[in-house]
Image (tube, rainbow over the protein chains, first blue to last red):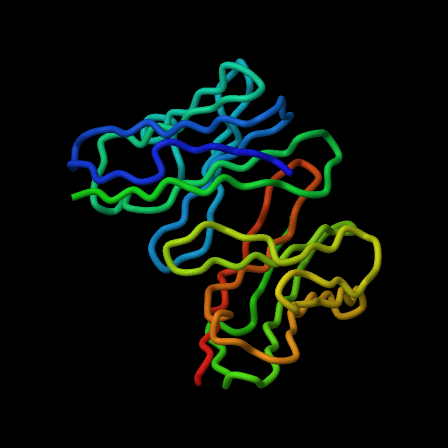
Length: 115
Length: 112
């Protein structure tokens, strides 16, 4: 099965600061995604991390707030910028290994609390 | 576009009684469907998946789900609830572009 490592697993941050979350996969993957789960809510797709180019953001999410990098086929980062308490959420990385796969895999998530 | 509707936001059952969590989906083509469970302060755990093979899918911990194309449903069942089943359950439809669309979730409460 897939091995997806997210770091940090949790953090408590001051408002106005930024946090970068890392997602490392055990082998090359075609697609990488970032999701957000706000307290008591379901998961919402933030963006698709594109290797070597700008991420593709879903409606309601912008690059200035959630810059994403994907320098290679096994690694991606999500930064939560200028944080406010409303950014307190679980952030999850998801991958599709091969084109045409019928399943995605999820990391264990990063639990972020902004105070 | 794909969408998922979980028909119950909360379900409460007594221990030892059957569990039914309902999910309807919308998809422009034959979908892949999943049920995930999330225990408090834990990550997502895959319960079971349907990917165009057998319509009755068996998962972990005694859960199963039946894909019914005519009803566009993928309801999750378990014959006998256990206290440890209390958690949040998500029905998910997956696109061949790799994206997952989550339902709003169903909170399962199991009473002693």
